[in-house]
Length: 141
Image (cartoon, rainbow, N blue to C red; front, side, top):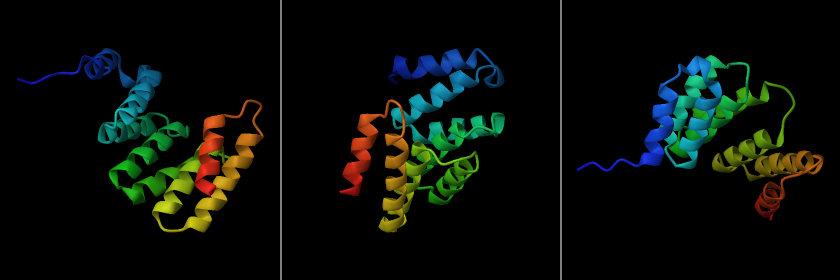
């Protein structure tokens, strides 16, 4: 007997009712939900689809890079995060992702540089996210 989790099947069923090209927000939300549920392969696959549909946006590459890191696909994660950087100035999300990547690659000094950049960018925000600031500070020691 196969048990189906309704909370996991409903988003996919509702998304399937509309072509992905017409429901980019739904596809993005689905990829985020899959990542949050640790369904990293599905999140990766939907992020790849988003990147094809929205190559000029950084968010698909953020989801893709995060999922690839969790799957151990480090080269693809590096490529995704580098694409994020190409969309303009570095933001805190990009900086924290690059910091995590550098620590996994064995370069704690470069990781600290990215975390320091993230902290500067976060503190400059009008309403900085305290949890992210605390995480960066904890990572820096």
